Amino acid sequence: AGVYLMDCTVCYDLSKFIAGSLASLSTMIHLEMTHVNVLTKCDKLSAKFKDKHLEDYLACEFDEVSQTGLSHLPARYKDLAFTIADVVRDFNIVNFLPLDISDNDTVEYLLSTIDMAIQYGEDLEPPEPKDPDEGDDLE
Image (cartoon, rainbow, N blue to C red; front, side, top):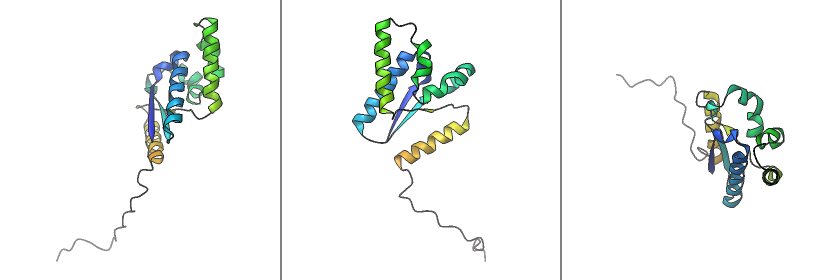
């Protein structure tokens, strides 16, 4: 299984986020294995950004954020960015999980998702339950 980490600071520049999503898509297609995409350092994002845009970025929904996120680009580059975003959206396999180290729930969810992806522990035998009546052999 592969784990692709992308820093959340690219969320402030939509063109960089689209490029990172395209790199993730390319890796997923070429490696042909289970893949977990992680958006790291989400604790560094502002509360306003988290409330307004984070879910769109995690699901790679560029429609909501594309109007303002690409306003600094010239028109022809905007069209190119929209076309690349459409490629990522058409494949519909790229999404991200947030990693916020200040929130234990996101860390645990991410670890369990990665464990499931790599099938960690499937071949292990379950531990034998200990009999509560058996104590130490103190004679």
